[in-house]
Image 1: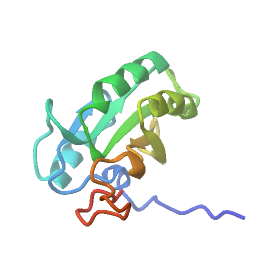
Image 2 (image 1 turned 90 degrees about the horizontal axis):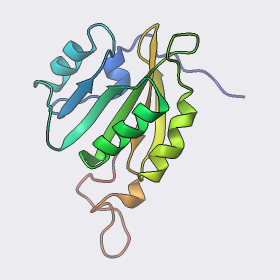
Image 3 (image 1 turned 120 degrees about the horizontal axis):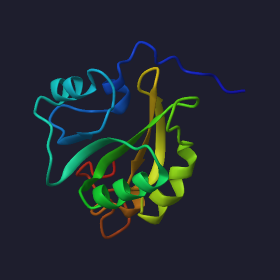
Image 4 (image 1 turned 135 degrees about the vertical axis):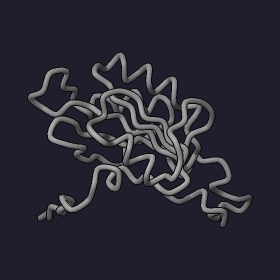
Length: 151
């Protein structure tokens, strides 16, 4: 029997896992106040180029999601995250998030979390699997001490 955990007390940006100092890019209609909250928690402005700790991107079709995965895969640090935000079931432009997983896997990403953003949007997080992260393992196969294996 599974138990549902109550995350209603957490803000969207807390659920997304944005940390102080993160280089984050936010694209599209991700909901009221999310950009502001990301800037506040990260302690910096949003970025538009270069390497990223995270990206939060609204997608409204499978084709758009494929383009986003292509665009962001090389920019996301090995310990970073790519949140694809979609409309919830019953909303215009709804996408079943499980249909996004095969495209991410083709690009070396796995899904490891979903969350509700607000009444209209939810997100699915994609990350680089630990086994594929650079410096995630040292020469003898044990975990590196540099924190690269976290997340």
